[in-house]
Image 1 (spheres, one colour):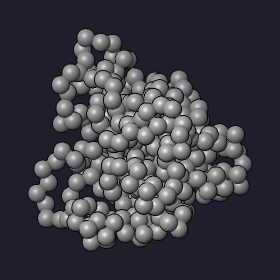
Image 2: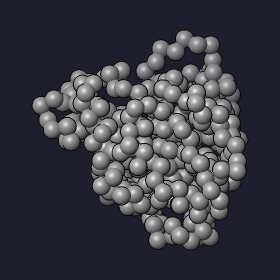
Image 3: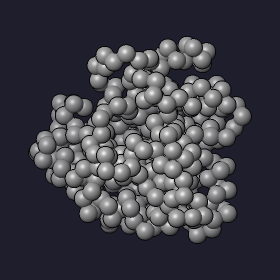
Image 4: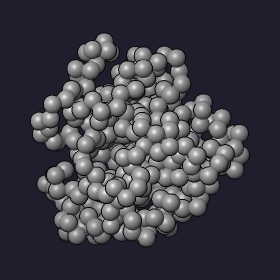
Length: 313
């Protein structure tokens, strides 16, 4: 069993507390089977869905940008993606939104590829759209994403929204891989969490901080059940999941910078959350997530600690 750090908690991959992801690439042209897996697991893992070469080309363009702003170790090859010693989160460019990096031809060829359109069209049984806003992230050594559901960030449109996450490069569990809690989207035992935390609109309530429920994966399984899963990812692999699937990432314990991207997909006949589509989508205000953890946010609002106390969870 391989020890894997999720937040600050070590779980052992290959034991009941943390299992590998189940691949479903064989089902991408079978609508009924694809939907069944998505509805049962709450996620669909598709190894090598994307062109590996195209993902690596997109990675090279992002690394070039990171090198140009001084985030990478200048004594190492750019492609090695070694973080400059002493680099802080404040120095890492926020690449979320719609910007020169996310709209670079090499990125668009990956994130809006016909292959991805086809998979989501198969899933939804109709043409699909994707948000103009892209969540492109570079995660420093020590960084991770805490326990959350995406609904808290993007609930002002169709609930039939999916997140697709993929790494730009080969990443192992010690670099920060996506971890999902299988069953968290549908099990009755998760209803207390979904009715409280999962139904919050963090921006509407002026939440301070990240929007994460917490940072301990075992807190979730002890209280609500489910099954945590993760594994190594290769360039070309993707995973997608719905708005109610509880997930987080493993912690980057290496000296490398981990690059990943989230895109969002939905049936074209349904409404989009207006914050993430159209001409006004530009460079993101840093509101939530890892960047927000370092913000001195003096705004009047509430905190997750206060909310959880009120919910009694």
